[in-house]
Length: 370
View 1 (cartoon, rainbow, N blue to C red):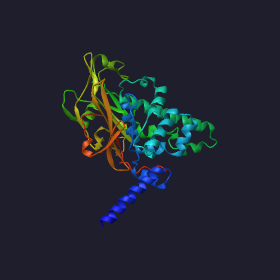
View 2: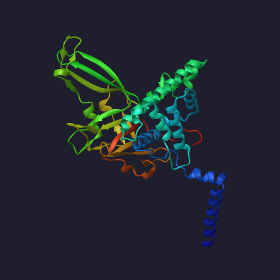
View 3: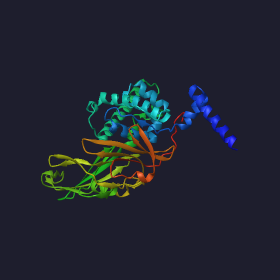
View 4: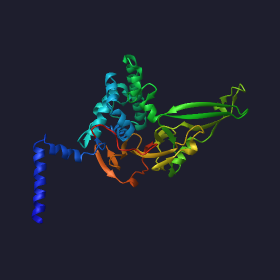
């Protein structure tokens, strides 16, 4: 029995060694494929770029986004329209999901972003939330550009509807990330009601000041709390014809498929910029039912799948990401190029800055070749 074990171990070692000497061998390819963890890939720091790396990891974990960006029709449409940022972002996602390395460089993405967003073209500490918003806006514009080109050159306009994410009526970023807020303005004098709406891709929530600990529901309640405009902030009433004290009632009119919550930890105290270190307790499941308008169907339940953490101070901090990999069904911590698997109970942290939720738990990604 001992001889048999020795023989098997020796044979296995020789096989791997032979495979390493011959990179084209099918054994090495099978060995690499077995060791590779699709979607679990560190990102090298290209000069204080942790804010970018953390955001890219969370987008890499957004399965419906990755599925459609790696779809051949989407890639072809973006390439033909010369959408540089989207092209290099798709190329990076391909390496993160299909590559064999444990880490890769996002330098190409950073370079493309800096060409359209020059405020990030330096090695200074940047805000991950600001980067996320501008990146989503850039992707949104690229999809519109690809759709417009398709409409211009296609002899069959209906063909546009088949291109993933490139329909002018169905922009990928809009479909996944965009929700809508409803504002009801009530005149406190004549009780006239006026309605306004506003689209959002990231919901920025205030963090209660002076608290050592609170919950994400407390932050949501503070955001949706009724406010009254008084004094110099009074609003013009169309019925009274005068500025009146006005009550503002806010609710969600349309829920997004992907809900991104931003905890407003950075603020000012006098002339100084400060960071709120309140430990905001959040949950794997989130219920928005009490903040929805009556027009929204029963779509209030969300599932957490990614978190961006910020440690340190306002100008000297560090971003990391915690993401759920739907293929391995495990959580991983991404600290630039360093990656490690973590238990679910490690996800809760007082350093949470951005929370990513989805309406439905992600399934195994439908990516060709995976």
